[in-house]
Image (tube, rainbow, N blue to C red; front, side, top):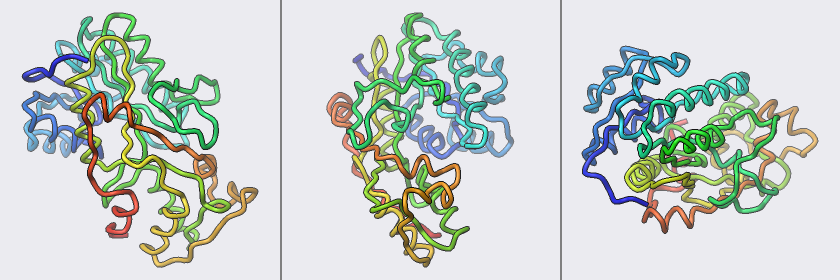
Length: 301
């Protein structure tokens, strides 16, 4: 780990998104200078209002990414298209973006990439650790960690932040899809006994974690887990959704999961508890925001 800088010049992709908006505010309040990527007038107004510099472009315009990253002390890549029907295509865009921005960062500068706990190696029910490698399989198209490790070979410092279900009272990561399905089906469902678990963390604490990683990540590749709750059961989540939507809560047999959840059935049959003990100790990160169920309970459905 390195000593905290007085301030850093930071290029942020996804700067106007769910996490990005909170992160830009966190960084600027801490004295850092932020350049945010946007392709829309609304995004430009949002960044200006937050006190950030506007950089026009998008994740498919690699020249805009390179020009945004050049001369920066750090790049934080948050942008990723969540359209599951185009996952392979979007994953390749992410890889190309990381490669493009990493190529113009000087040795000793910092690249922070966003990954996910769902693409970490581990057996069902095994608690994922920061030391566990990312899945390296041809059937898993997202490979931000592998792309970032290639950048690190040039002497760029790399931090990998693995996201759990990041939530506030408006959004909750993959849980948003469960809410959509519950609305469509008229029931809030879980699979089997509902014991499968998803890790979670509140939005504001995650923005703080990114700042701490920005200020303290040193040479090589360092992995952090954005996790407050090691595992929230899908039954608890389904019950909170059912209460919020005022619909019945039901159990779906495993053999009918695909029929009910469609392409989302893969995720609702994953048991993914995740530890953040090392992250907390290393960065002195102590998340204290509301839990997943608390935010769901207070959500306006």
